[in-house]
Image (cartoon, rainbow, N blue to C red):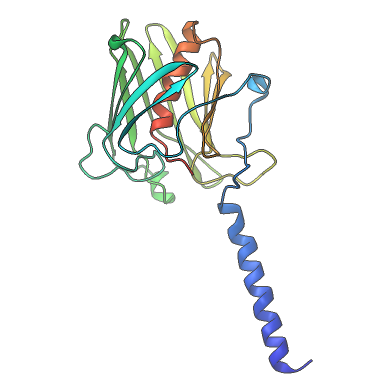
Length: 228
């Protein structure tokens, strides 16, 4: 084979190899978040819009949610926009259930300095009695990926929150979250799949205290996310 042909063939193989290396960083349109067995059989609810923007409305199982965001882009795995103290406000259903979320970037920890995703803290308060609070920020560093972890609390009820970075059928974690899990007494009881253009929620009965907690936490987390 002529030398020029060998050079061209080598370049083609090199470019193909580069494309193969870069491909895992892009989430396929039909991808789905890996689910815990404890919620694998729970029905999914699709909700939300293809783009959030600064303000708008959507419905979740007939419940209207009105929201206002402090920036056009807002995501826990992107830097917090400069001087944005109150990134999010939303109201779901009753007027006394208004939610205000604050955000700030703490001093970087040893984990944060090892990764490119700068963690910031999202802290939310619900006005209804008894008052509820949510806070989520830097979590654990696993396989070079920094998670976001926190909790939702209302009275004596606590639901843990943690980001999920694995897609179904994949062993390679994504840098940004593909969704979140909600845990009660150590068991995953709800999940928010953000791997596609429309969120997918699995939750207990929203009429129960745990179901309400999962729902309210999911609303805050979904609005601190940018649709793909």
